[in-house]
Amino acid sequence: MVGVAPGSAAAAKGFRRGDVILRVGPSAVAEPSDVSRMVTKARDNGRLSVVFQVTRGDNRRFVAVPFG
Image (tube, rainbow, N blue to C red; front, side, top):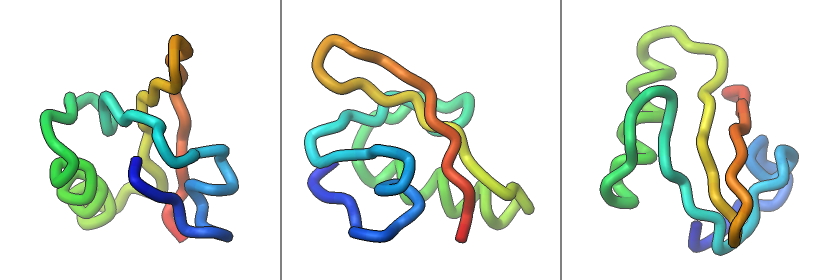
């Protein structure tokens, strides 16, 4: 990530600059633009949140972020 908006749902879930998003839901992220496309698709399909697989250094975790 190049940045996280202060006060956003992502910030509240602990996302930080430098985190690497590996997956959005079941789909692998190949390039940064995939993330916004996948999030938009999930929202348009009526999802209330989306699950990210994120790595920070040697740590990998799953984070569910609700749509605001």
